[in-house]
Amino acid sequence: QVQLVEIGGGLVQPGGSLSLSCAASGSIFSIYRMGWYRQAPGNERELVAVIINDGNPNYAESVKGRFTISRDNAKNTVYLQMNMLKPEDTAVYYCNALVKVRSNIGDYWGQGTQVTVSS
Image (cartoon, rainbow, N blue to C red; front, side, top):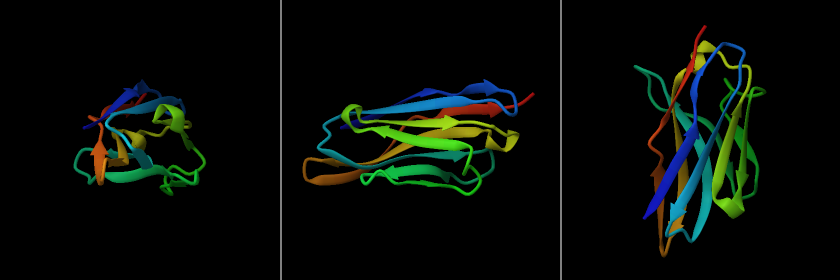
């Protein structure tokens, strides 16, 4: 019904930057919320940043001032600009969207993309 395709990620040195994008497609009536989560080995999945329909973003404390989330509603796409990356940012990053499909509302996930911060 709804597919989330992530682009970006990779290997970067500490202090470097990476950008992620995630495009939603399928039988979408509307998208209430889009965001990014991450999961490091041995850890639970955690919120990185989310942006809802009013445009106000929310960030995890650990990424405030370094990461920026933005959204293009016309393209059903969410972006994550990651600056001043630290080794502890290493994780698989997942795109998430709360989507209305016809009369149902569902929570959808991307396949995940690896971000590795290492020298």
